[in-house]
Amino acid sequence: MDENRKKVIVNEILYWKKSRMLPDRYCDYLLALYTEGSQLKEIKKHKNKMVLYLANLIFLLLIPISALLIYFTELSIILQTAILILFISACIFFVFYFSSKAKLMHIPIISAALILLMGAVGLVSEIYPENQKVLYAALVINCVLWLFAGLKFKFQYLWISGTLGCILIIISIFV
Image (tube, rainbow, N blue to C red; front, top):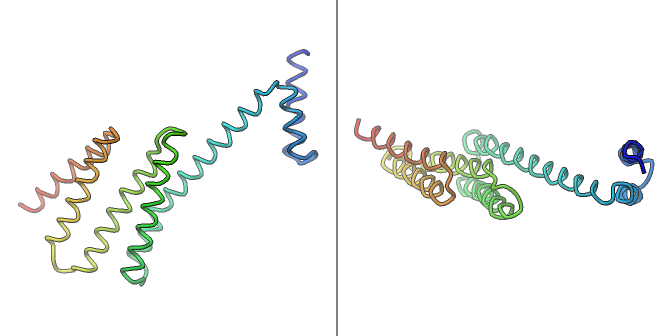
């Protein structure tokens, strides 16, 4: 069959599928028939990319949600901690689960790091409002975690952030 004619038929079937003129399985069958199976692979790749983009958007939204949760609500410390641990666990689970199936996700790692930082600063300042040593310790632990994660995953931005954070904390302590 002529390539132009196949392209017209495939576009028509895609239109039918989009407008729900035929059931999806019929359209998928016709697409597989006319494209010899290549169209279904492209559709699956497109769906996987959309899922990854949506997941990254959700993880980006977890950062302001965490900030609102910590700084603008009257929830108990235990509930705030539990929700933040849930957010961080979701980010880490997403990274390890999808790292073998797709490119390693940078946005969930960044989201987990920022949520951990906000949670540590918010909870430490709420529990120990007058003790700056505990706050400095929490910040140093955060920066060391970033440093080790950056070295382990070979992410420059994490180990640079961890190193600069430790340097800035040390400078602010002694100045």
